[in-house]
Amino acid sequence: MGSVITVRDLRMRYGSKDVLTGVDFDIDAGEVVCLLGPNGAGKTTTIEILEGFRMRSAGEVDVLGEDPARGSEDWRARVGVVLQSWRDHPRWTPRRLLAQLGSYYEPYGTAERPKPYDAEQLLETVGLAPSADAKIVTLSGGQRRRLDVAIGIIGRPDLLFLDEPTAGFDPQARREFHDLIRRLSRTENTTILLTTHDLDEAERLASRVLMLAGGRIVADDSVEGLAHRIEGETTVKWRLGGESFAESVSDPTRFARELFARHGEAVRDLDIRRASLEDAYLALVQEHESGHGDAAARMFKEATT
Amino acid sequence: MKGWYAVRIGARRGLTEFGQSVRSTQDQGFYLFTALLAVGYLFLRRNADIEGTDLSFASVTLPSILGLLIAFGVVIGPAYALAMEREDGTLLRHKAIPHGLTGYFTGQMVFQSLSLVPQLVVILVPSFLLFDDLMADPSGWFTVVWVVLLGLAATMPIGMVIGALVPNSQKVGSWGMLPVMTLAGISGIFYPIQQLWGWVEVVAQIFPMYWLGLGMRSAFLPDEAAALEVGGSWRTLETVGVLGVWAVIGAVITPIVLRRMARRQSGSAVEAGREAATQWVR
Image 1 (cartoon, chains in turn red, yellow):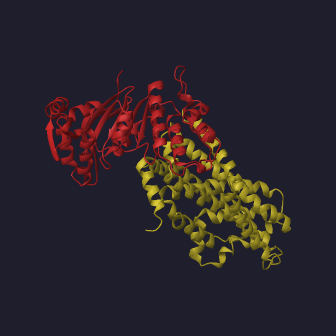
Image 2: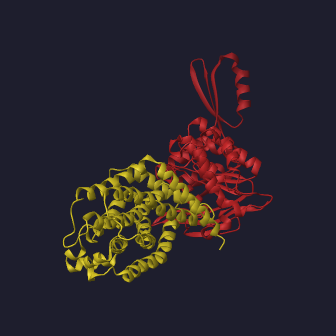
Image 3: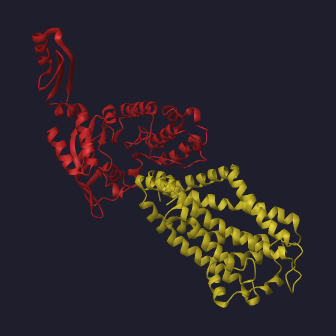
């Protein structure tokens, strides 16, 4: 399948501040891609440019065959955007609002891809059926976000954008949301691009991670791939006769075996720790937040290549 | 045009919003409050007559008050709705949907226009029960209809433009309410416009509010009452002319301003609005 999103040398500048300094990536049909990066790295800017909500300073962007800055209404009908609501449509009910917003997609349906989704079924899917007739103002934060998702996908999009979709979720709502996204990707083959600053979320959802830092993509790989690249040395710690030891080794399994062979049961408090992707990411975030975005990006790039 | 179906969806949206509004105790309270003020004002002066005529104070003032409420409702209503719904993400939701903005603005116009119906009913019904001789000639109702429709077309764009330009919903008071109140004060609603300084009289006649009031008086009052007006005439042609010009200007400018507003909408703009709204003290 072909490319759904192509981004070449995308640049964004606000006043004298460069937020994006040359972003390149491709996303293929059916992929679930996570744009991961610290707060302020330019994730929202990037996704808003792709959504057609924001004008870029320079670079080439192609989304579903069109430039989002001049996206047609036909193009709009193929793109879903999950927005974060906070108090819109307070007097509407989820059922009424979904039916109303869904009706805009009717002329765009085809025999093999009818649009919009059936509102009732969608309410069931996102778990909103019990509160389908409650006023939206009375919904809890988690229910509201599920409604956001339902509105984002009511038009049965080919491509779905989600910006920090689980910000403010409790762990339960978060898990349910992840299930929903995976189901959507599996059953509809929807291409999904989401942003997050949470590595764990990226790991759970994404088939591929684009790491954004210092205004560009510093890593583009699966989470396992990234983890694999970053795992070099492993630290082994142990205690022997009241003394502590630590050593960096490349084959921890063999090292431990030899340790036991030599000292037997005298070895205490064995601790084997791999350099993890999480450590590397946390270091990146920390550097970024202390204002060294560029340095952080370079460091991360070196660690992963 | 492919987007025409969205006008139909928008009209349905406006109807739904209207239905939700008349069922909401908040909006019912607002209608009753304005009715109480207006009818109460007329009732307190129920025995007064207009000097030099045999017209009652109520019969002369009621049409002016109706004109004021129409102008007030369709300027402040859309101004507040647009500013608010831009902040809370309603507008952005429609921007993310094919032809959604067409539907949204249609819905807004339908809803704001329909909102006038309960507003007028709650004042007209008690007024007709309490006061005599309000409508000189039943044919005046026909005039009421065209004056209301033309007045709507002339004033609603002003509200939409204010709503599109105002930086945030908290500023609708100073950007919308204040100018409308000032205009109401000089538009011959509460006292004849001729009592004001000459230049104020001219300024008032540039804006649609005066003509809305005049048109309403011409609908309700007997022909003799025209003697009280500027030039001793209802100036029907001038009323149609001024309101018509405002309507045409509005029809040209409003879509441009609304498009500009919509273009600047994004998720981060909504997020910024949310933060600004939760930060009342600055």
